[in-house]
Amino acid sequence: MSDAAVPASDPFLASLRGTRVLVIGGTSGFGLEVARKAAGAGARVVLVGRDRGRLEGAVSALRAFGAAAGGAALDATAPGALEAMGEQLGEVDHVISTLGGAMGGGFIDADVATIRETIDGKLFANLEVARALAPRIAEGGTLTFTAGTGGSPATSSGAIVGNEAIATMVKGLAVELAPRVRVNAVAPTWTETGLWRGLDPQELEETKTSMADAIPLGRTAEAAEVAQAYLFLMTCGFITGQTIAVDGGISLA
Image (cartoon, rainbow, N blue to C red; front, side):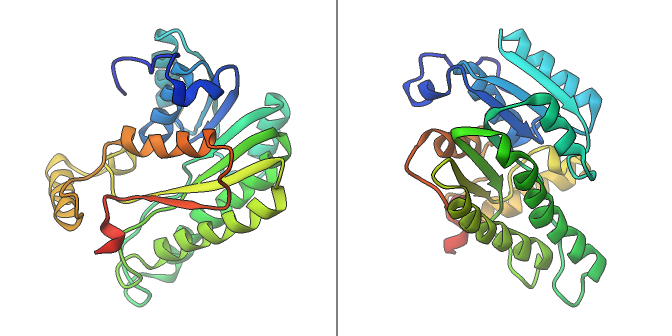
């Protein structure tokens, strides 16, 4: 996380002052950067993460900057967990979900269980977020998901299907929840975040170099750069049903 909070005077984020922002998957990576920027603009943030240690560390770091921050340690994919949390939390203005993972392998060489698990972790886990929390979003609020870009069906089969399914779900939800709530998604490509904490340092660096070579801009993104897209979707009041690629042009190559 960056060393300083975003100044509360930032005009781009002024509309977030006093709002309540719930970030599912907010203990690292994109989610934590969104929380940091929103809190710096005067929002009250609540982080959700399954690892209690990382959650407490993230909340403590935000509070150290004077942010109004809280947390809930739970597995957001567990049946009934989001409903129970929502009942305790009450009304929120913005919900951000970073649920979903990555996978390698095509439709033949990857096993069906892995493909199914990846699709479930993207589409159905986020559908549960929508069903559980959309009724608790205040009028004029937002629901923002995380899809992805890069890769191909032959090398990332379940992930590609899941990402496209999120984009489709966003279009449907945007109509169903309009005009009360706006629904969008951010689609980053490979970015060095906590999702890859299981890689050893050499493997991580090799992956980062390989991805940078494939991206027209010649580098991978910083998590803070991707976080800006979530903040844009939260604060631009006339955009809904969209999935914005933040991928350095890799989807154009």
